[in-house]
Image (cartoon, rainbow, N blue to C red; front, side, top):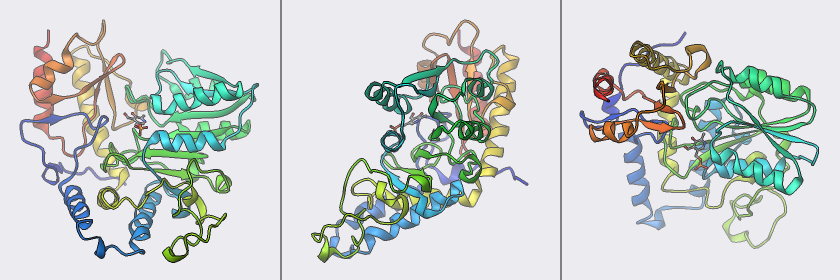
Length: 380
Ligand SMILES: Cc1ncc(COP(=O)(O)O)c(C=O)c1O
């Protein structure tokens, strides 16, 4: 059973007159995470307090916490700087040929598109774009498109413009039936929407930390299915090789790697400034419970959607939309300058494609929503 989490604004440093309805762009850093980050930065003032084992300790804690979020084993998790880096690893390790299609969505986020169009150019494969379905049912539209010539589906868990939901468990099973791989960019969902790698069984699953995982910018995590653990990293650094714990023996060069997905870790993955922030954020998320976060945010976006509908502003219906994510559709398009007018009143949303994206989090309070509707009602 899920519980509704009361407003957590006190944990954030958000002035009363700021309505940040834009977590999909970037989450505000929690006070506890900022404190962990400040202490982390200060630590390098005294490098004599950092010992070789510290290059491993926090990375392993963070790897384990991320594994808990997606029901994986820590050995299946690599540390990456961005979603695009994770997708580059996926593209390097999935096979595709001139007779194959790579499936993506219409208006998919570029970090999960360019890497595949480059791979298609190199291999002669074809990018197959699933058009936006008129009935908003992405899952059915994707399932209809899966055939024996699909080699890879590169998908999100929800569309980044309007929250349109993609049932990856069903799609994963259909892809396995035709021997195709699944690469998931869950940057717009992990941390706020439950994900279970044992059920979806993606080949690769990446998420940047700085949105729904409430963590720092320039850090992310990549789940890698064990069948790819013998794959090729996209860079070669000292710490991912076996025996790197022994600093005095690093020039005894080794061909073998640290276990599991660690071979895919980015260079300088110990990242002393950022890793403690990711740890603090992931601990808080696990403490709240991702199910509870999703239930709480679903109720919040549901209220907003219903109220907007009363003003003639539409959105993807509840069952076809990720609960934490709302895109408002205005008849005749998004009013010119709406984003800037709201921002002038310290109400922050974002315009993406034809949608006004409204993405609250646990720091959102009723007053934020009142101010948003008040300003919307006054918009020409
Ligand atoms: C769906 C999605 N993926 C990834 C990213 C970030 O990509 P990267 O980490 O490559 O900068 C964003 C940022 O808006 C996004 O919306």
